[in-house]
Length: 541
Image (cartoon, rainbow, N blue to C red):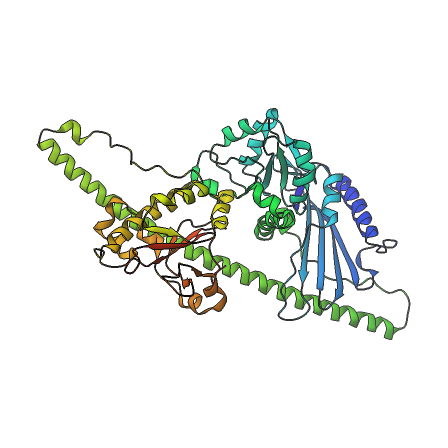
């Protein structure tokens, strides 16, 4: 959690220290003699404190380390109050971090939930993030609040996500907020600015946001940099449907917190916080005991420092590994988009040349008005939802859907506008290919079809088609099993085949949907669609 307040450093520090003591006492830790340096406040629990003030400002910092057992590892909680005199806005920053550091090799860190200190601080302080106020509990958006909230969404200084919960039609707003939204938002205090959109404000809110609406009991997470006028921006701001929330409220709460937690870990700290020195363990000087006892105490402290350094190294290595994995995925996505853009550019240029050629010929033939007349809109009616798409499979006689309909319908809760168009265009192209292939007139697979002239009546970008999975996916038992998808008995006696051919319906989103299919046109004259849903697991997920 990183928030700021307009209160001065001294006042803020007093409030923070008061809440820290309350939190520690709630854990039954000893707060009777806390001081600078290391404090032993319970068995296997230490609290380090350091502070400084000078021409560049001031800070006070506490770091608590709890080690219940080697199996659990160490829970490290850090609390910082910081004022930087170089900050023109004269803000006082408050930072709360909590992380698990495994003590045993090969163990992964346990995900952390929002610590109680975060809620206590948000209740006690007038905390903010850019233009938004950050509170522990969600605030209702009324019609008169909409312009202000829109400004917060578009604020370039915002660091935290803004999570907006809508109210289902005909449901009491207060009851929905207290009974459902509070549970869904359980892990979000300090990670996001929280709102409940009142039914009266919903039409105005969605009209202004245009491509970024939220309604029907859904919850939308708006990450920094919202651009209401740009349709592609909508895919950056995921939506969770009412159906997903009510199906498993605890799971929904964890999913809602996952991306804000990830962003909190990856987002660079404000300069005022990033410039602080590393907190070094400093033992409190002993005023009694023999020289041997003092040396023994120093030796114990040095061993603790060495252990902490080892834990920090492991945590840093894990963080670097995660970042490298993210970079690898981003590079792959960029390569895919680059290839798709190049292909589309070539097709666009070829189409432009052909248009100019026909315009010149029509003009020469005296058909000037026809040459430059506005083209008729394509005679395609796209589905409005993925549920609608499934219902319209009857319009595709050479395709058969054998997958789980629920998986496909659940895409509606996080759908980006063009996913439906891409999916429907892909199905139309597959159906046209299957029709020709069933007659023995196709010269190759679907990818070859998309690259050739035959597909012009129902074009689909070849860059969005993959006819096989990587060897690592195909040879991995778990990943291969996910792609063993249902077909009729006349296709395969075991009623399952390895469907590695797929269409890339979306890129760059946490869902990144895929459509897996199996071409059996040489035998049954049908292409079987065994899966349409979120990207199946691979070596990068």
